Image (cartoon, rainbow, N blue to C red; front, side):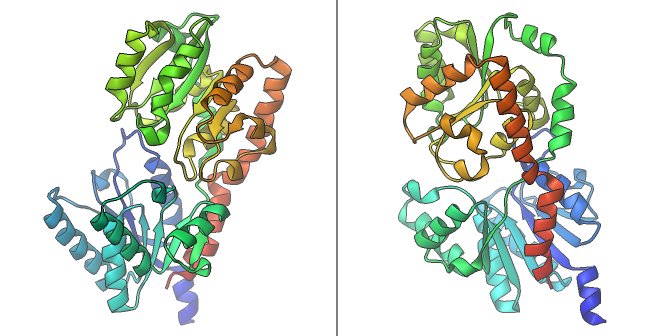
Length: 377
């Protein structure tokens, strides 16, 4: 009977790095996910940055301090508070500090930690202290959770982890909600808002403007389409923005590239309705939500073969996934997609929409219950 009650009301402490209703991040998917899970799981949510009260879960606390030492103390107090309330298991999304502190507490109190991380962090040099801290954190967690089988092997290799301790769990989106959201948008008004003529083709980029996300390739892409009736819409911001804007302006390419800055996530999604091609020239990715969104809307895309990109996309898109750094091939394939016949474009869209169903919220929720919730005590 005791075991039965545990299964009915498992307790899970969840650490979310940030939350804002107007955020450009994909954390809104996590919030919606937790609202569904809360029907079966007792959730204690710790929001490191932002107003958690707006989320609407029963048990939410938001951290208030911004100075690092005070924030560390506050995080520790909140995690101990959760543990004293019977939350023996903690799931941490990306936060290294959260994972480190939760794992220390778990070691002392015989708890369990699940830490989500999905990317290629080993490709980028860290200072000695940061590198030590990351490796120490990975050594303390009970389970690493990542997006694909290939990334599981890479994390095991780079951080000396047992593969058996690593759980593979995909990202998710609400496919139907995204499709309905995009369908409702008035394409003509959206194009007119940005001075895009009726016959112009649209290439869409949505990401942080950093080298990791391939932002430095954008001027070259804009230059490559300069003789065509094509507009590159750039949604995002970051350290490379000023340099990219200046380069594009100096080359007289303003007509072919428009910077929209960061937009709230739901607003950014609308632009898929006018996109002829989505581009993702990232040098680092894990399990990009934005590719799932492109597939859900049936938008053709070009991307570099980094992280789990090939593992999460259908065979029909393989020709448009290029080797990392092959910008000439990337541009060539992007132009090829712009010229696809209606029939081929329709076939590709159908393939993407069928494939992305496996990453729908309901299906991933079942996996989450099986690989995470069933382990919760």
